Image 1: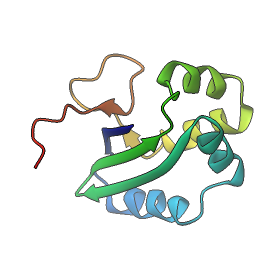
Image 2: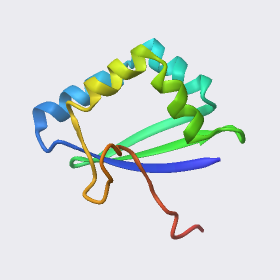
Image 3: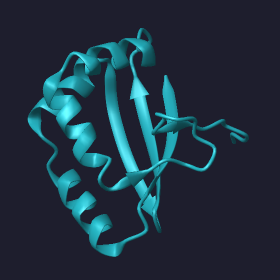
Length: 108
């Protein structure tokens, strides 16, 4: 399965540079949590302060299961708290939402 998600960064060049630096080499525990949830590939792209994530997953992947796994993982919680220093919710996000799923509107 392929999922596409979006999120904004705070519109501050120094914070954006720090955020990108963290993603040059993510913490090993974060990579482990991503892979163990059934995410086989993940890419993040940026334009300005807008982020776009593409995830490829196994057929049994679920966001609910990933969320449960993350809630019980201290290092993931530490990472998410750190990343929230740089991130900001999209205008249409509900309280507590970060990455929002995008709807595919075209395929060739």
